[in-house]
Image (tube, rainbow, N blue to C red):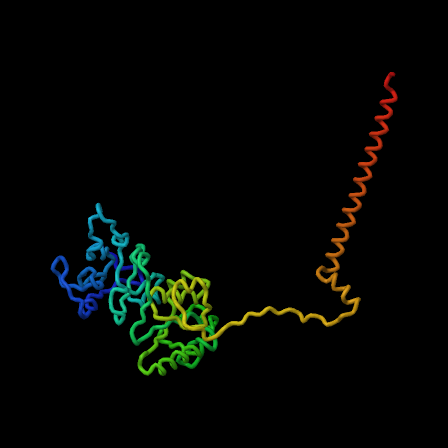
Length: 328
């Protein structure tokens, strides 16, 4: 029996979506109607990637059907995968999903290898590019942070931090909209764009990325951008080297200033005060230990020195005595 993916992230049928793509019609090697994966690429049937965990590339992609004795066949050809529903997988499973780069950005088509219990060698062998989905932008909110990012329940109650939503029930419920300073800021950008951006849809971070980065919901949100699950992530992000390797950042809106606070230097100039400063690096107890060690070292030095001199004196006297006892 064919696998249709793991629970919460099942394979779906995208045949109608592929069949509706414009100006990409072709005929496969078996005579079936199909679409080109990319310009100059393979022609695949409309059921490519749909409905079940199969070696779709090995079945459809001519790149994977080369003579293995003369050409190195890419390892992804032998892995099973399928197209999945991104919303369902992000909310109900830990499966890792990515947005395909083969088709138009206006078609949100996502695939997963992990739901088929196989390894994603495909994305490891290509340069991942984040694609903004036309004029409709999807943005993830990494966490609650009052007053910048929060949710408002139908009864008017605000969810401002994780204490109000310990099991993330509200956070993963996209029917409850996000609000706050950053959401208002993004909505203002939509208005200022004068139609260039039609809408920004705010959503949660995927469970898979949250599991991958359990200590940082913000890094998890950046991972979703790299995977193509969302077009951007909105929030007070620190720009770190790790995150810069995943995606690019906008010009910072705010800066965190880090300062070192020390006691104000004294203004006294008296001799007594200046003399006292010599002893300030150590506490009185530590000074006592230092002095005790110095005295102990001095006494031990004198004691061993006296014993050494006494031994030499005794040795000299014994030598003279032995010489006086020798026969002439």
